[in-house]
Length: 482
Image (tube, rainbow, N blue to C red; front, side, top):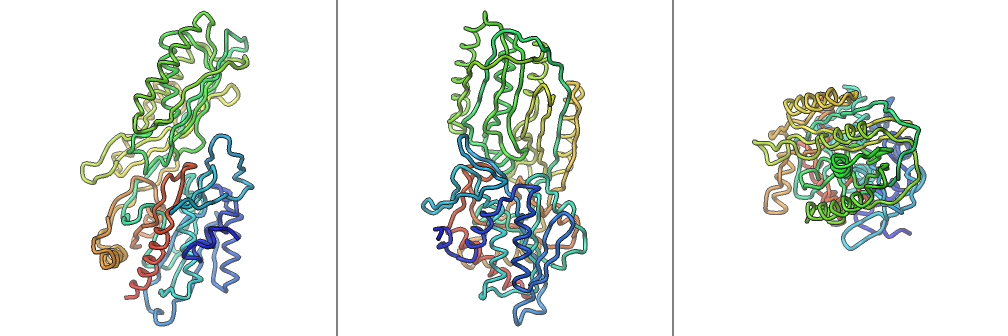
């Protein structure tokens, strides 16, 4: 028996454990959705599934709550799939290997999937909990949140009956969220000219050791992107000696801060000493620059096999372009203590066969921030000569401080803790923005247990926080009777 199943509340950890036995990358949620559909049908509950795969499970009110407003508990079943170097794990086949470390549950070398598996597990636990009191209940389990919010994008208005919605996709106990950032995917692409003749010596340059993390909730911490740093290092080199770019690859997800990037370059061997000095200087430069932020940064290079490459002029042009891509906090709000606009260089791929492909995720709280990002990134595409595209934009969630779920949650929390619960707007994309666009009269609030390191192999969830948030959810459901 897994040690995870002995944790309290047992119903929550049971569902979370079962989820993590089933691979659930974004856009591949068929197995996990089939599991939950079967679980609902086994309990004799009404379950609906739309064309994209979202599930809506309906449970009747408990006795005495038949006339209470219907409440929706919502979470997404997909997870970010990241692993450490050297970790052998196939996210399409292998279960998540979990373990307990003090007051935390972690995964061995991979993301844990507590984002948002823990919220989903709480919703499913409510269905089985004999102590849970509630009005008519709907459990909304969406798909494809992490890769562009495809699930809620495809959802239709009129599907749900609830008056209130509890989103359990927040990650800091003691805080609830009443607003979130919108987002847009920005991409660049181009075919590239390669010379089949092989020139000079070839080295593979690797930048690794960064913490990474969530490109929304960690962006204000100053953590760097391996894509941005490696491009800067190589661009600086190309300003001082001719180099030819063979490849540049970094990042796998647009919403994760890139922890590692690699490039292959060719150079004239007469410049070997300067190359060595340059990389030694940049290692020291990065260590000094990233003190107390990304102190594990490592820059290294090694000889590699010869290959076709771009001209030194084209290489310099492309590297210059990469250094000008927006990364990190672009603007802080003058009204709220939160980042207003940011951008993350999520993925970069430069290869002879695939050409250039760059994927950014920009986040914004205001329409003005959205327009600024589009103008600036489109201008960069025009100046560089690379094809630009913005797509998959989703709206921000505007705060409603008068909502019944928020006021009720605040009262319950303060009665229990003797202090008010923090109310914030999060600089990350929650599905509430798109849900609110479909259901403008829906009153919503978001909260959840403490999760650290989301979107990275450092992801972990706090065990006592899970128990507290589950009880808080049950108390909120009970209190929303009137």
